[in-house]
Image 1 (cartoon, rainbow, N blue to C red):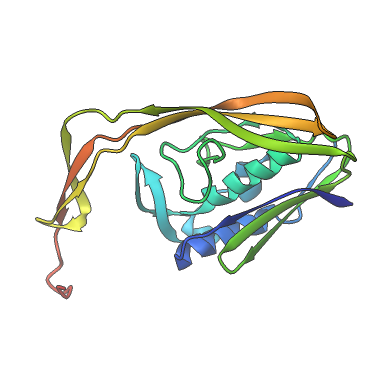
Image 2 (image 1 turned 180 degrees about the horizontal axis):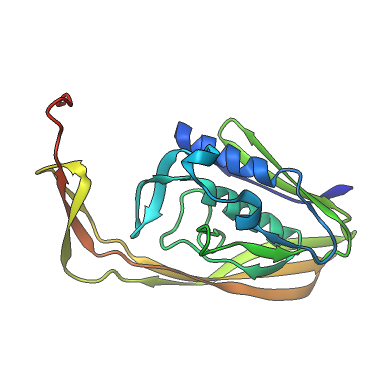
Length: 238
């Protein structure tokens, strides 16, 4: 078997998040897809629970990062999405994050939520395919091995970028993660719309330009967060 496609993303310096990425990618490692076989990220990785070894790390909720079980597993699905594109698999289901992520350009991420949002793709190569993952240092690499079509090159193109201005005004929210009385201000952030395409070339000739989908990253209103967390009497104060 030869290399069909490979893609690498860099991981943030967060031990729990790195642990979750390594654990999720270990479930993907060694997966064999038969011809026309469909890969389901949620089926392969399973529930992201503490009981299964996942740890608490930042997850994107309501357009901001908050602590949550299994934080980081979307970097595995997003990296795998790029491998599926470059291997010329058929993308069946993919959803972008509500906000752009740090480890990939807009239009190239894929969020997953167990029981709700999945990454699905079909092996359309006509041959068996092996998926392999590797976590080394601060890098996650996912590769697909199979039988490549000689002389074929696959490119990913993200275009039709349109910035979406943030809503006017300010919203105030209570935050149980912040100490009572502490106030944090988050400035408004613009949103973004992009479209993703796959370009297939044989030699210098473009034989296919395929529309993959559009991604909408929501704009965020200026927000003031007011802490409501009460420190326990036995808990040392900073």
